[in-house]
Every structure is written in C-alpha cells, then in structure tokens.
Image (tube, rainbow, N blue to C red; front, side, top):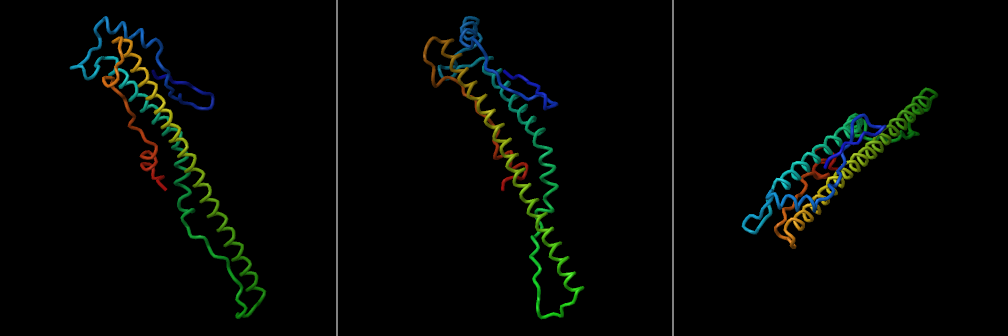
Length: 195
C-alpha cells in the first residue's frame, strides 16, 4: 500500500510502498467468503488483484509526479545552460610576427587572449555543469525506476502468498503477475536527455 512520507527538506511528501501484512490470513478469509475464484483453472480472479493493480498504478503515478517535482528545477538550469554550452570554443589568439608590432597592437592582442581564455572557461564550465546535471537527473530517474520495480516485486510476492494460502496448494501458472510501465530510459528520452 502507498504511504506518503514528509521529510524536513522537501515541502511535498514522497511516496513509498509498504508491503501488506497478513496476506495469507486475508486470502483464507477471502476464499471462504468467495471473493476470489479460478477461471477455467487457468487464472485466479478477484477484487484483491484488481485493487493491487490500481494501487500499483497509483503508486507509479505518484513516484513519477515526485520525480517530475525533483527534476523540474534541474531541467530549467540544464536548458538555461544549453546556449552557452553549444557555443564553439574560441581558439587561442596567436602572435603574428609579420605585422608591425606596436604597443596598441600588443595591448589589443593581450586583451583578445584574455577574452578568448575567459570565453573558453565559461563554455567548458557550462558543458561540465550540464554533464553533472544530466547525471543527477539520470540518477533520480533510475532511483525512481528501482523504487517502482521493488514495489512490483513485493506485490508479486504478495500475490503468490495470497494464492497459495487461499487454495492450500501450489498455484504457479494461475497467479496473475503485475508489471511496471515506467522506464527511466523512456522518461529521459521524453526530457531530451538521451545523450
């Protein structure tokens, strides 16, 4: 089941998945109350499975919303650095000995070198910052994907316990499995971070 935990740092609450306790006891009670059934001895069907699917889709949506809230300020900064990072790095100005060397020429040449070095530093810093932001966003998306996958694994284990306790036998192929639709790679492509 979904729990929302508020932390001191975050204004919004973060979703976490808590496994349900006493699944076997619930299964036995549901079986005697006829709340679940075999369909043609192929699958087990009941309200418990549908409720778990709904809870998991709600949890997945909550995790994705929390991820969007965490990533949106980083994406704003990432996009604001894009024009600077995509500039070409200016080449260092070299000294031509063929031209007439005057004090004004040397001063202008020195100023151009300083400007080119400053511009190179800004472009390199922007590229480095963008790489760090992309890595942070990628890590957040992968953490969200792991969190969702862990919840789905726990629910699949709960469904196995539920079915085994309800039918007092090993039910293997008949147990409905739930699978995630969230993928960190798809999420990053949607954001434009498929670099």
